Image (cartoon, rainbow, N blue to C red; front, side):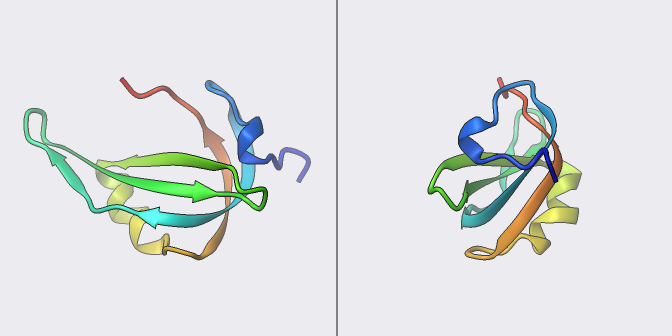
Amino acid sequence: MDNLLPIEDVKTKMSNWSAKISVQEKLQVTLLSKNKTTYQKFIFVDSKGSKVQGIMFNQAILVLSPKLQALKKYLISKSEVRLIP
């Protein structure tokens, strides 16, 4: 896996990268009533102690959130980094 990166090396607009992380914190699902969007925030940390916030929206919450448990380790792959307004 030559595209395996520490979190600190991941930059905005990167795609097709991978990182080994653990879920440090999993926040509750929140509804934005004005546009009926749901989102859930996560705090991920890598083996170097670097942290990043991840956010899932709508359908992704139903599919992925039950699989991501706090304090468990995961490999995130084929990911994309985007700015959220």
